Length: 93
Image (cartoon, rainbow, N blue to C red; front, side):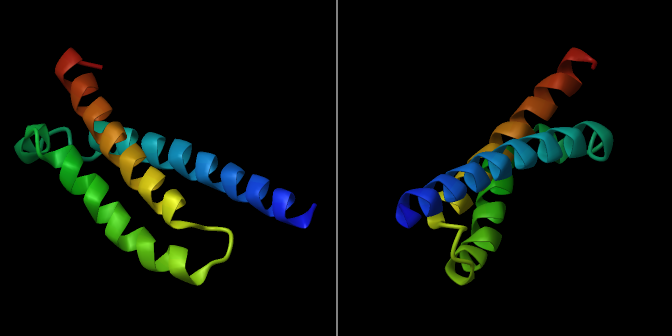
């Protein structure tokens, strides 16, 4: 029973981290990096996602409810949020 609850809480934390990082990256690109040409590079979302993965991996090793999967989802969400923010800038939003 406890293991199932532990897994469910970890899954909720992972989903929340993914949604939060996507929104944070998208808004950061749209508001703070709108005049930076380097963010429009196709490699920028990859670099942002990898940077978050590198920062989140040691945190995942220290906290019991944050797993490596959580770090990977946070990195993926950051990369996707960065790409979404760049697309929004190109559309003029």
